[in-house]
Length: 197
Image 1 (tube, rainbow, N blue to C red):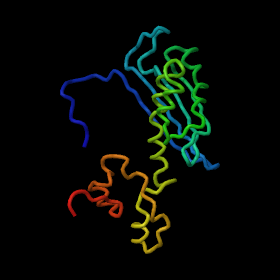
Image 2: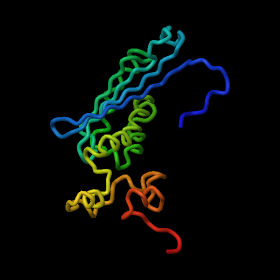
Image 3: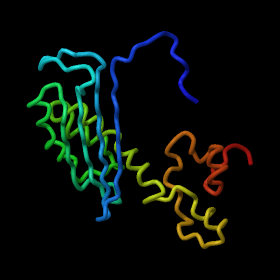
Image 4: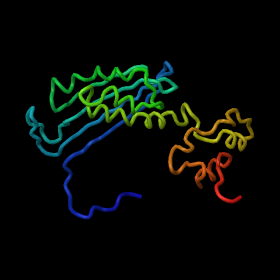
C-alpha cells in the first residue's frame, strides 16, 4: 500500500538517495558497495561557494569487503562531491578502523566508538550503519537458507540436511516472531504456542 496522497501542493527541494549493491566475489568474499547522495533542486550557497541546483552536495561511496562470517576484511571510502573540498574528502582512510569488525556483533556500537564526531564523516558513518541489514539481505538464499530445510526437503522427498537449524530470520522482526501467525503458517515446526493448549 503506498503512502497517502499529499494533503497540500508541494515542491521537491531536496533528494537524499542511498544505494547499496552486494557482489559475490570469485575469491569467496563479498563487496558491499554503498553510495549516498544529497541533491538540491535549486542553487545553494555554501561557505565554499555556490552549488548549482541538480549538482550533488554529497556524493560519497563506501565499500566494505566481508567474509562469509560477515567480518570486515577490507574497507574503502571515496568522496566525489563534498561541501568542503580538500577537507571533507580527506577522511576516507579513517574508515580503515572498521577492519576486523563483524557486521552482526556490535558493529554499530563499534562504528560509533571508532569514527564518531571529528574522527569520521557524519554521512559515511550513517551509510555504514545500514550495511548489516543490507548484508543479511544479500546473504539470504545465497549464503544462508531462508526456508525451513526440513519442511521444504520433506515436501520434495529428500533428506533434510539442515533440519535442526532454525532459519536465521526467525525472531528478528515483528512478522517473523516465533509466537506469531506468519511463523505458524510458513515455518510451523518452529512455531511457539502461547496460551492454553
